[in-house]
Image (tube, rainbow, N blue to C red; front, side, top):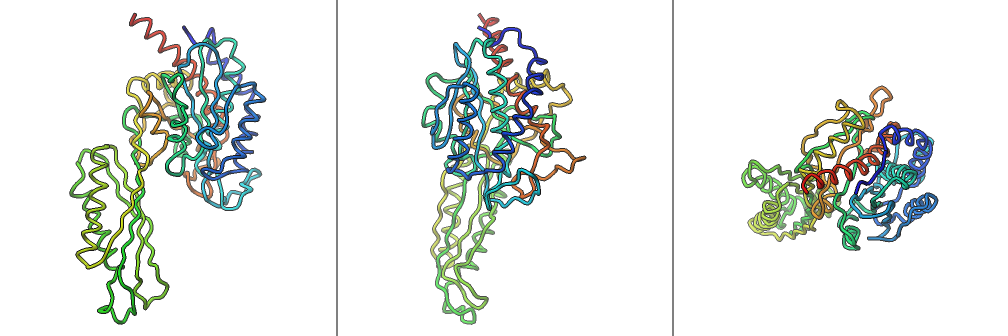
Length: 408
């Protein structure tokens, strides 16, 4: 059974152009009213109101402030996901839709993802009488913070009753010009674990180090020793990153040796066996180094996101339909990334494709990377963000069914 009847690319693009002002309006509203992870209540209410206005049946408060809806009729095959949370960053852009919330900003483009999926909903709703299959709509909270809203929505059954055969997600990508997209089949993004280390010593006057057990020097040695995990223990064929971004002494003067030093970092890789081994090495090496200096070390590594893998059968199919919609020159192949995404949880349950949406425009000066206070997009990207996802949902369902018919 095909999911569409005589729906052409030009039909999608025409609908995108018609509803583009509304999509821009949605995006600017969400951008101006950002909410941090696990606090997306008003964003959920806004998205729910739009879905209600569109006549799309949905449920709220899934996995926290998540939303799940469906449209179409018949068998479920495709799920589409967008995330909704913002970051603790003070926006520096001087724009009409600048964040109205102090120290909170949509600096990672989740406003774009949400507005784009709402645009996809609008397009598919207008074509619903031609659809002969169901599409699940997932508006997800808390992508930016452990344990990740994806894991919580999965626990609440977002991928069950029935299980979708495929899932799609997209993410803004400033290095790509608006109008382009990029993707990679297979291993694409890394797992990510947060590392918290406490080095406990005995403080005192800086002029009397012989009476102290200095956690600062020990912490420095721990940082150096831990770098051997990548240089001497990691399999050469497995991408691995160990970085530390924060070190604090629990003291307050230049002539005081503190009692405690805290170190925070991240470990990333693309192999689960090596990941487990490496995390044990981090604990063992840190504690052994501290013990060698006569100190105590406490290590806490909360389990983070798994690696993200784009299905090697589904992703080439997605790429083919992207080229149909945008032209071959506007679909690029991407390298692996050591950044992480909680969309990875979905990829470990159903065949998935997570791709990049070009949002940059050098001529307009829109070049700032994500997670910066000056991040913004060329809003023309919203046309691709909405229209392409609608086409992928429709065309991939059709391709799968044709493949099944050939197999039979």
